[in-house]
Length: 289
Image (tube, rainbow, N blue to C red; front, side, top):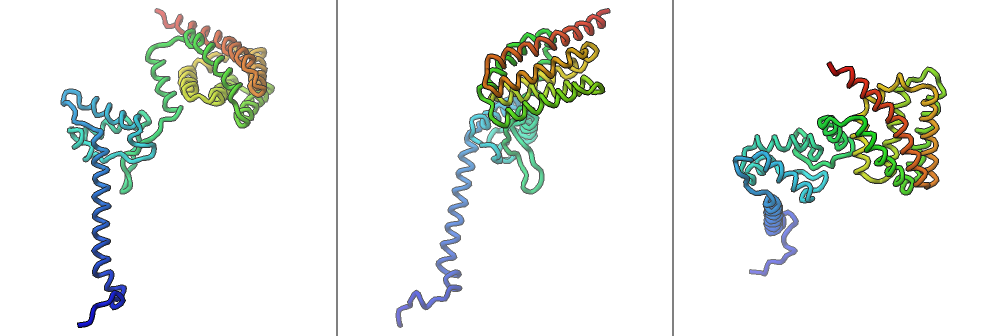
């Protein structure tokens, strides 16, 4: 019998014989490798004590995210795998994931391609949490002004050293908007104050420090009501002072004059902080029986 040659086999026969076997073997190998990697990563989670299961599940999930075991945008293991790895019910895992979603650490997507994905908390989320803390602790306007005077002065100082072209353009734009509002008699203090808050946030963004930005967002969310409430105390002279101070601050930051930026910001916060303290103390006095 003649020897069988490789060329005697057609491509279809190759698929049906050796190549098909190799492909199936490779696929099984890749699948086993993927499963082993997933199981290895689940090893970061350990069974928890029943008495404090929820807190412990939350701590371990948060720790896995904060330590970058799971990167931003990456899908977390499903509820079934997590419940088995942690030794708790799926409902406990689900509740912990919902808390992480509220904290901004996780994004929960529905549908066939859904699941729990690692998210990166932004300044707005952190600012909202700080606002809740400030309100819960009952911080007074006087305490906030005391803190803001030094904190915002330093923020402006860093902004003057780190602002880029887009930051400077944004500050100039907001200062010009305030000047335009002040020049119109029919513009309200609420309108001017809203742009003033945007200016403060823009200064914090220009400092290139995410902690400062988050704190700034929290402070101004907590102060939102009292800032508007000082309207009866703001006369034409004070309206003009806002425009002048923001213009001077934008100029100092654009020029890279850190000391000037700090000085103007401190004066600005002190000027309007006194009014905020006065309004809050008047409100407190009315509430006393």
